[in-house]
Image (cartoon, rainbow, N blue to C red):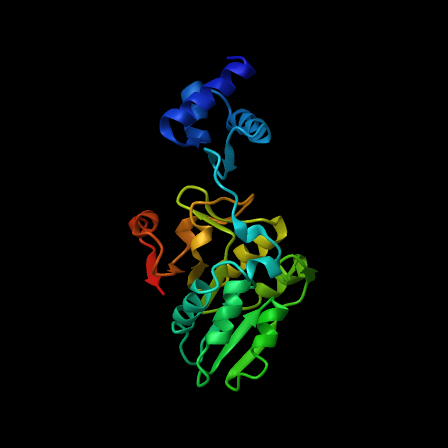
Amino acid sequence: MLTQQRKQYLLDLLQREGQIVAKAVSDALGLSEDTIRRDLRELAKEGLLERVHGGALPLLPRSPALAPFAGREQISPEAKPAIGRAAGAMIQTGQVVFLDGGTTAVQLARQLPRELCATIVTHSPSIAVELVHHPGIEVLMLGGRLYKHSIVGVGAATVEAIGRIRADLYFMGVSSLHPQAGITTGDYEEACVKRALSEASSRTIVLASPEKFNTASPFQIAPLSQVNDIVVHRDVDDALLAPYREMGINITLA
């Protein structure tokens, strides 16, 4: 099969089935997965599909959460504090908690009960500053290169420091959430840090404001099988939440 024939086959398959699984196509055509992945990468560059881990999806909307930090503060201004309160209520006395960067995580820090005594580990200066005057919170900051777009530390030093800690909970911020594309974000190094935080925690809880659903960002953090809980605003359509419930993920409505 010629290259152009393979690409047309892939586009026709995507239109019929709504997704492409690279391994299944390679088995069906008797070709290597590398060949199929290369075709998918080229089709993605042409703007004809959305490349995701293990295959491809139809083009998905880009998340507004890819905007700079100041711009993101204006998105979902009512939902984010509610999500922060619901998430903060999950923290128990004495726990060690990873708290991600981002505007929803900042709201979580602001909503923590004044009587809570716990340890918050973060790579976000914004989170650390929010907790300066919280009497019962011990704050541990992870170092690294400052990624100014999200105001968080990234890089090898950050990942190495994460590996020395075992947390009870990780509250993860994401740019995008999709049943097939999984949890994704806009920067490769930031995705690596989030993945390391999840792997070093007993429980991963995604903070998802409404605009992030059914969108995709370029870099996958982890498959949805690694997510234990999603905290969302109660106004999110139940049809958007159904696929995650079917995967066994706990949904908390804020």
